[in-house]
Image 1 (cartoon, one colour):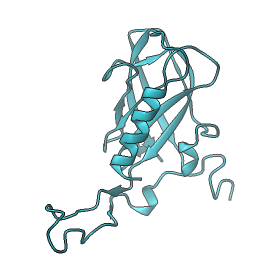
Image 2 (cartoon, rainbow, N blue to C red):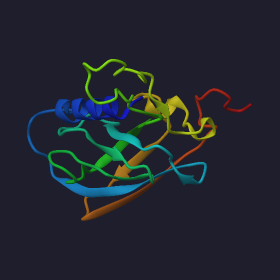
Image 3 (cartoon, rainbow, N blue to C red):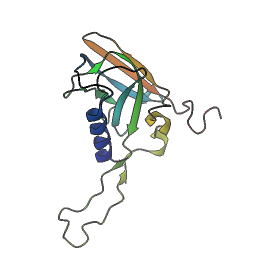
Image 4 (spheres, one colour):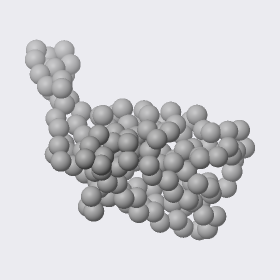
Length: 164
């Protein structure tokens, strides 16, 4: 998934919301995503999906290449509403293709496949991007700051090779 694709998915989730248009109070929420004990490589996006019906909007954010993130709901970095959420994580594993600048120049689309930015051993299982089956849940509390440590595992339930 390219960085641009992740940005479009994240913007769609943030604009769509999960309920009415009434602004629900949000609480500063940040953290780090780790994979097998080290910061998740490549960066990506994170979205929270409520596990129960509740008014408000979904929150999400960009995961930096060092695994850190800050969640946003109504504005940049404002946080997430209180509750329990399923966590969706999409990892950026390729860089945008290099079109060589001027798109009218001969050979401008020389590299349209993109470049892999994450070693195969560091690619997280796709189950973490599933809004229904992701095995990760978090609880956001109604307090000034929520610090999350989201630990991903190569052998996540529902991923290929689990229990093998």
